[in-house]
Amino acid sequence: MIIFDTNAVNLLPPGGVRADIIRKLRRSGHHRAAVPWVVLEELAAHQAKHYPSRYQTAANALAKLREILPWQLDSALEQIDLERFLDHWRSVYSEIFEVIETSGDVARRALAREAMALPPAKRAKDHSEGARDVAIWFSIVEFLKAHPDEHVYFVTNNTSDFGDGTAYPYPMDEDIRGLEGRLTRLADFNQVVSTFAKEVSGEAAEAVAEELLRSDAVRERVAQTAVEALESGTGFPGLGSSDAAVTWQSWLAAPEVELLSVNDVTGHEIEGDIWYTAQARWLLYGGAVSTDGAGAESVACVWNMKILFSTNEEDESPTVLSGADPALPDTDDGRCMDMVRRFRESAAHLANRVTGGVLGTRDASAWAASIGSSNATAQILASLPQVDTSVLAAYRGVAAQLAESQPKLDIAGLLPATTAAQQILASMPKLDTSALTAYRAIAKQLAESQPKLDIAGLLPATTAAQQILASMPKLDTSALTAYRAIAKQLAESQPKLDIAGLLPATTAAQQILASMPKLDTSIWATQQSIAEQIAGLGGLSAHRFDAARAADETAAADDPAGEDAEPTPETDEEEGSD
Image (cartoon, rainbow, N blue to C red; front, side, top):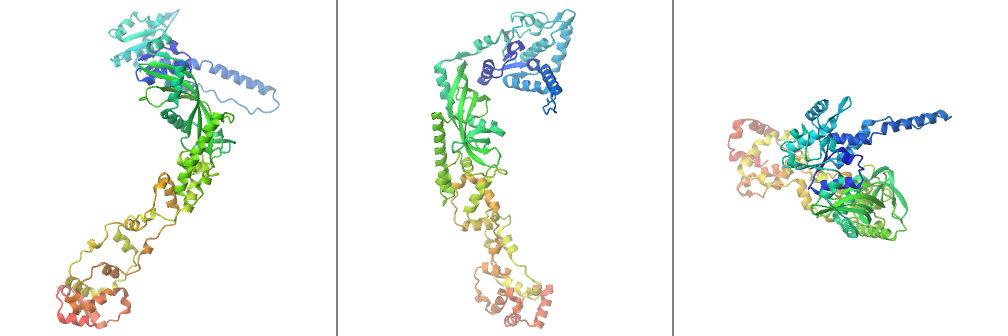
């Protein structure tokens, strides 16, 4: 663990070489670099030192300007916000350093030691000072006690308060007793570099750095960072498909990335791995949302950044330390424009394949002429003029075009949550069974005289949706893999298919009898007419019945004894003759 005192990193530029070395040490995984919380507060305070006075200077200048203007001055200063200023620098330095928190106990003990003017505090004329130095010292001691396997390198040039690292005054010697072997003082930042890193520079280093920056891992990281970081309501400049200047506000998908140049390469070898920082200039090309948010277009732009990366292949993806706003490519730069043309050709080729599989009859090559990204979705969106992106970021226009060219099939509507039997019964007209009372006994006799049928076994084991889908021709959906979201929108936008309307308008009795296997009726020839009556129950209103016999059989049906009694041959013959 390397712990820095304020004097070693005071007013440290976040984008400077020293900050980059600290980042390299931390990213290497071999070393930790930290500041106590008190040091973090001092770093932020030193950055904010001139903020109040300069704010007041600006406020006074505006007041003097108002005195001489014959009109009302529209300009005004926002309210001074010192805490916001401090929070900014706390955040900046917390990204560079690990922060060792200062506990409440440490703060109290530090104030008590300052009151006694004991080292590292001291007496100054008529008062004591040094509570912050004491808090820094106690933070180091607490860390050593909490991490018995760590060796601490304390970087400070304040030997008058902290000693030279070989001997400590009372009571500091008591504080560190038993821990002396795990604490080493380094005088300044140069000693940090010489102790933990070896500088690597020259043409060889630049060549290695450029090769690393051209790797897929680095380019993928830059592309992803572009999606996450590049977004502007006012817009960025870019080169459109016709080489005209356009403005855009964000990427639709990760753009294509190619390295244009690399300079200011600095390398440091840390525990066998070389860590580089460099200024890199990238060409970005892809589908982007127009400034007004109502369209998509192909865009090429140049992005300059400072990047941290390593020769260690197992290391995490590179870190973008800082980046400028994208700029317009130089159309006079032949190498840059050759890359732009290659991106366009590659995008058009891929779009030709995609549109050839999806749109079929459309002129895919003409449609793909202005496509903007090798990402399939982004290409299609970028090629469409003024695609509406207000709801689904430029997908609405694509969905509408696909909807017009596809058969109207409501797949979602074919997936009911009920079983096949429930669907069939629900779709059939309701039967009026009040007129069937007189025939309950006949139905029961008929049922008992027939072989037992397993009706459950006659029902299909699949749902209606599965049956219908199984009977339909198989759709080739291989070309639609990238368009699941669009297909879902298309399905929801089509008219719903009424499955119930596809079922025959037959009665329940006819359907059930039709689904039963043919029975051997030779053993009940005398009951033929009865079967015919049951088979025609759906048209009861067309039959004529003897009213008196119907009344007798109604009574028999309502009599439990009559229902259980076996029918006589004479009764069957008489009823069969009706």
